[in-house]
Each structure stands twice: as structure tokens, then as C-alpha cells.
Length: 254
Image (tube, rainbow, N blue to C red; front, side):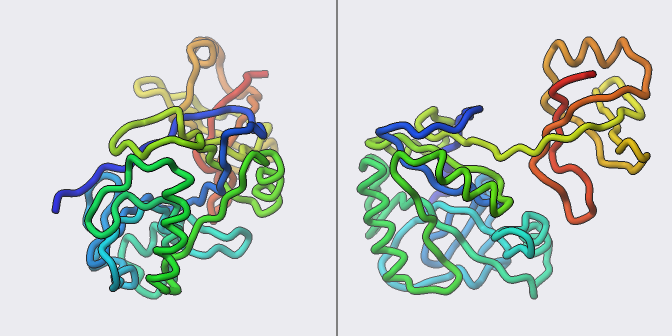
């Protein structure tokens, strides 16, 4: 059976509570598709031998979800998931399933998402595995869920339009991620051109990582015209275990 490319997320900057939408937590791990005796990443890397816990019996299904490792300060730890992917066999993992693409070998991708969610609940109950769990969701109350996400230091939420189908391999505006950004005042200590890279440090001089993505045209023009050190405001997806900013982006040059 050929590998399916998963449906991908669009982006939404501000969190809202819109009617006609469901909202679910965005877990921070590895996007994974899992069928009864096989699992693979969104890029087609087969991971069955890496995650043998995810092999399950019962009816033939194809699940879409996020492979996570439990964290100490939040429910998920991206570095833990990556360490298991790299061969650390004693790292605990869990597949947080948020969609079902096929059932009894028949596609259900064209079903409305609310019907797929009902089926997914039944499927997870049938599988009855401690390693495969259901991603919860709420209807309409996106802002309330986002407050819970911030309190638990999670990556963000995903908004999904009611009535929408699952379209493999497509980045759709029917699925939108809203990131729980953290904001930081940093010092630029070095700018490298070609490719553009910006080293960051704290005011006290501690190295905080490098910015390599997310440059707007305005930010690029300013970066190549100013000599470090200078202050910038940065947004990031939290911190790594080594206390570096995760995926930082410059939003303002002060």
C-alpha cells in the first residue's frame, strides 16, 4: 500500500472563537501516520521499527497524529521525541491521534471532519492502546482553549473548519495553526550574510541561539545596514532544554 501524504496547516496570527470551527491543542512532536502494522512520517520515512509500540490489531485503519514524548514542564517535549526518533529506545512516546483517513480499508477522507472525529473516538477505543491517544477538541471556544495552552506552556492550537474534508498532500486554509509565541528582548551580536543568519544574546551576554528564518523584507534591509551590537524584539516557540530560543524570529529592530 502506498504512503499517504498528510494534509498540512495554514496559518492564523490571532486566536478567535468563531462559530463553525473546532479547536484542538497543537502538540509539539513528529507528524506521524499510523496503520495497523506500519507507521511513517509526513516525509515518507517508515518508522515501524523505531516505534514498535504503535503496532496495533483490530480493524484496518489509517490514523493521522503527532508522535510526542512526555515533558516535565509541559505535556510534550520535542527534544524527547527527536531523541527517540534518533534511537534512544528507553524514551517514552505516545501518538496523539487527531484524524482518521481510512477505516476497513475504505477512505473516509471525504467525510466532514465532525463525522471523522466521531469515528476516530470509536477507533481509539477499539485499539485500546496506552500508546495511542485521542486529541481533545472544543467547538467555537478557541480563546478559552488558548488560555489553557498558554498555562501549560504548549506550542499553540489548531483551528479546523466544520464540514471540511481531509485533502492529502494539500496545505489548506481549512486547518490553521495559531502559535503560542513568547516574546524576548535580545541583543544582536553578529550578522552573517549569504545565507542570512543573526546571532542572539541576552543583555547579560548569554548566547540564546540564531535566527535563520522568518525575515521580512523590512527586517532584512535593516539588518544589513546596522553594525552590531543592537537591540531587537524576538518571538520564539519557547525554549530548548539547553536554554536556547526555539525557532526564533525577529519582529522588531529597536
